[in-house]
Amino acid sequence: MEYISDKKILVTGGAGFIGSNLCEQLLGLGNHVVCLDNFSTGKRSNIEQLLDNPNFSLIEGDIRDLAVCHAAASDVDVVLHQAALGSVPRSINDPITTNDVNVSGFLNMLVAAKEAKVERLVYAASSSTYGDAEQLPKVEEHIGKPLSPYAITKYVNELYADIFYQTYGLNTIGLRYFNVFGRKQDPDGGYAAVIPKFIKTLINHESPVINGDGSYSRDFTYIDNVIQMNLLALSTTNEAALNQVYNTAYGDRNTLNDLISYIQKYLSAYDPQIQSIEIEYGPNRVGDIPHSLASIDKAKRLLGYDPQFDFQNGLEETVKWFWENNGV
Figure 1 (cartoon, one colour):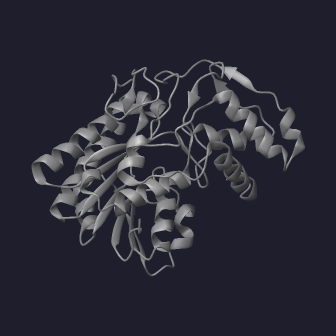
Figure 2 (tube, rainbow, N blue to C red):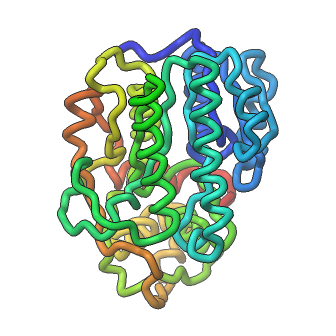
């Protein structure tokens, strides 16, 4: 498939981990990119190298402000909605702010996209929507009850997107991300994702703490596979592929014990002492599901998805990036 080019694209959350990688890729394909971010979790350093590009513009603003959303969506062809407050623990500690950003902010963007008559809105959904469903692999049409406020907000996004198609004819595609990792992911703070946090901890010769006994497993998904899914969702001309939700994953799973073992192995190529650092174990996290594994058959069938990076290849690239960037 020929990827989208020469379009004006709004990327909300464009200074975040996934958003900034998408901005970079879209500019490389010859698009005009508008980045909307309030820098609550996004970083200026993620987009610093883009600021001099004449095809890139930055709007510093909050999706909770409808006027900001209208201004950002004005005259754009398509919207990539990545802005959200991630993290299950954060949502448990502060459900109100999580809901304001993830539900009210999302609704604002839908309204702005509808009013601006954009061709399509592609949004970040979440594997947390599967909740207590035990079936593996996870298939898009079979979900359980959500296990956290965050999961509820991301499921509500899917419901709102569907209603905006049914009621107003706004075309949307939801991408249920499964444990995305890679370059530019934030290793710092109480709600940092596990992979960058483990890498930085080990680079600093400290003992990482695994929640539980390390047997929980995840479908860890490298950033370049996620970029491919977003590009396919933006570019597809297959009408049957629109107004759907897709698992965005590799389709394999690894335990947390596997994860830490591989990180130590790849880091020890740069610093042999890392191999012998002890791992600590703590209690399981509230709201965590034990196992996660995606079926990617629907994405393959309707979008032509073909992930290029398996877990180990992606992890090796990620470790290299963090090492070269001093564990940033």
